[in-house]
Image (tube, rainbow, N blue to C red):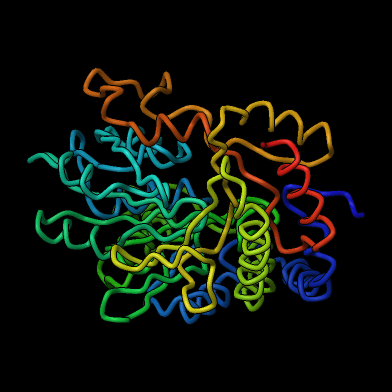
Length: 387
């Protein structure tokens, strides 16, 4: 059996080596390292894939969130609501901009923003909502957009883990994750479903005026060289990373399907284990597939995350490592409990689901190169331990 890896970037690279190397060589031959032709080509290709009017490439996913908030004109003291159970970058940029983060609990089945908790958190100071499409599953965007419309709020989608996923509205309409709110953001960190070989990110919007503002922000606030029209930052996607992404983009749907297939294997293997809760596919508030089906593409499995309900999560984590099965706990500490983001407004009773998840979740190897022999070893090792 091949060595099991949490993410197998080498195996993936071997299959697209010629295309990646061709793109990188093109950049080196032309020396067009910043805003070169490949950056613009990748931007256009991604706009077509997402069916969105504007893609603004930038240096990383965290910058993408910050630039989106700057572009929307949020001001110091404005409240921005987001999920308590996610990576810190989401709340980090809110704090950096002197906005006020408001953390709310998540759903027990999808780990995404809880709509009732969202509604309760809205105040006259609330200006924006940041739904996070956690682990690759799209949040309940129809409900989020209804709440935003009712209260005249901006919606910034944190799509760092779900590029390639689609959301199905109740009327049957489908839309790519990251293109539903006022603005969407993503990360091209190497381990992402669409990852480069360094840092990278992008912002998406169908709003022409907002796109214009953000294109200036990413480049020191310039539209004409040395003329600074808005306060900006230095956040550009370098051409080598754009070349890598352009080589990978035609394979993104194949990558997502490979992850879904691995998810199906996992779910089937754990189906009879009463101490394991497996991920579910939930395309909107009224459609819970339960299975990882071919019809619903709401989940692209950036992570495959279980809940271990018999108190053995930490022991399982150690056991798997000892058996050569990499795994991770995403996330061991809730954002409201992090030293940097503690706030007297929060009560532990506000976060029952998050406080449960941090004690029970464990993420298994999930990538495009997993084979059945590896999956069989991983699942049998877990089932033999969790009884």
